[in-house]
Length: 132
Image (tube, rainbow, N blue to C red; front, side, top):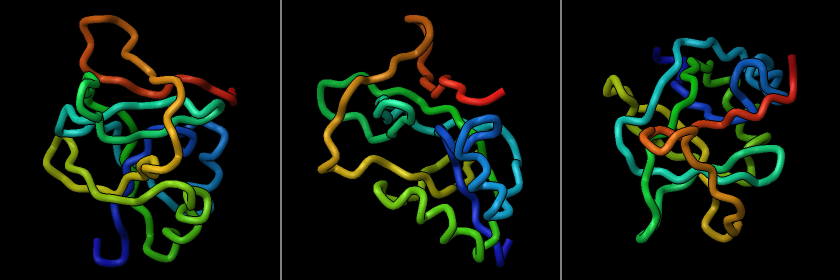
């Protein structure tokens, strides 16, 4: 994996969503569905796309579910351009691997928080589909 990197996506870059074409242009290869190893996140709706961030004090933290892709290093700038308003960081996934993810920038402001489908779930994910 020397010429590639792992990228965890949770929103519009996932298969079947409107920005997945960018992942395809970057030659990203789907590996599997994945979940964060830690229950540490909040997911926010910014309209037609989501934003992930670490849960703040007083917020209920959730695991985040998404998709794991292997992306050639030459394709990463293509995705970085789309995600320029986010900050890229590494997180640990459910199997112990680390992958890059794009998080909401601190100065963006947070709008509608997304919650799990049922009250007994500990995992939140983006469901809005704009294709198919």
